Image 1 (cartoon, helix red, strand yellow):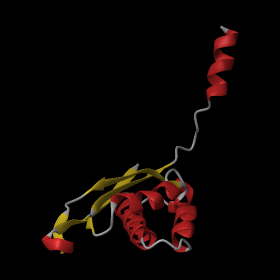
Image 2: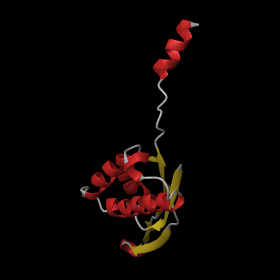
Image 3: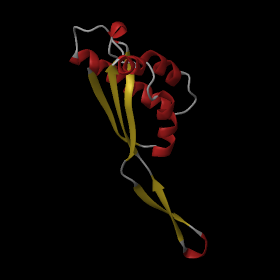
Length: 130
């Protein structure tokens, strides 16, 4: 049970966005929202809205399920480079410096945790008994 939300052509560099995305990867949704809300980074505001959108998408996809009981978490978050606007800035002695205005694409996947969590300890116990 998972849902996806995408943010395309966000006008900030992928490196700056990845710094914030790494903070919430694998977190519970409520905890991730709290981290993003109080983060001083500008990219956190955009990711907060994107995470809220992913949660709304999950609610639309599974209307009979309850968010608190499902235990939503950030299953996957990817930040890829988007298009790059190339500009020129005048430089001394008739030269020009190239300015690259970067953008990025963000994909976030939220999923519900399984009720019966698989534990590797159970597998070890089964192997020793056999």
